[in-house]
Image 1 (cartoon, rainbow, N blue to C red):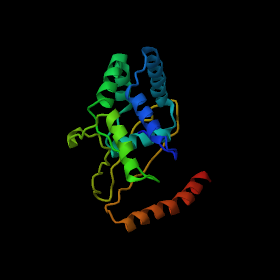
Image 2 (image 1 turned 60 degrees about the vertical axis):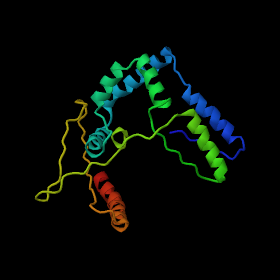
Image 3 (image 1 turned 30 degrees about the vertical axis):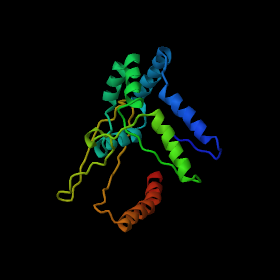
Image 4 (image 1 turned 180 degrees about the vertical axis):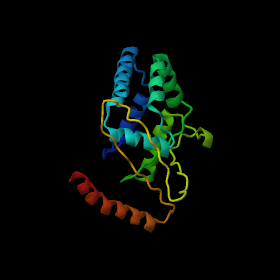
Length: 200
C-alpha cells in the first residue's frame, strides 16, 4: 500500500518521484542479508510470545485464507536469496500484478485522472484472473452438531510457559446490519464484566 496525501499543487510531481523511486528500488545484497537476519530473529522469537498471541495465531490459521504456518514462513525465509528477491521485485512491480487506486478528497476529476496516469505509467498493472488474485477470505466453520462447535487444541509452543489461552469465535449466519450490530453490542456488554470477573 502506498499513500500520497497533501494539499500542495506539487502533489503530482511528488507522486511521480515516489512512484519512480519505488519502481526502480533495488536493495543491495548487504542490506538484504541484514534485513533477512532481523526477520529470522523475529520468527525465532515467535516461540516465546505470550500464549494469547499464539492462540490468536492458531485461530487465524483456521478462520482466514492467506494465513501461513510459522514453520512454512521460516523455511521460505531460509531459502530466500538476494537474486530471488530481485526477481520478485521485477515481476511484481514491473509487470505481473494488479493494482487498485483510491483517490479522495478536495481534488477535481482532472487532477484525479492525472494522479492515476502517473501511477499507471510507473507500474504496468493489469487485471488478474480470479484464480491469480490473492484475496483474503473468511473460512466458514462447520455448523453446530448437538450444540457443539468446532474445537481446535494446540500445545503451547513454549514448553517453559505454564500459562494458556482460549479464544471463542462466533460466526453470525446473517448479512443483516441490525443483527450484526446486536452482536457488536453483546460483545461490548459482556467484555467488561467478564474481564472484571477474571481479575478478581
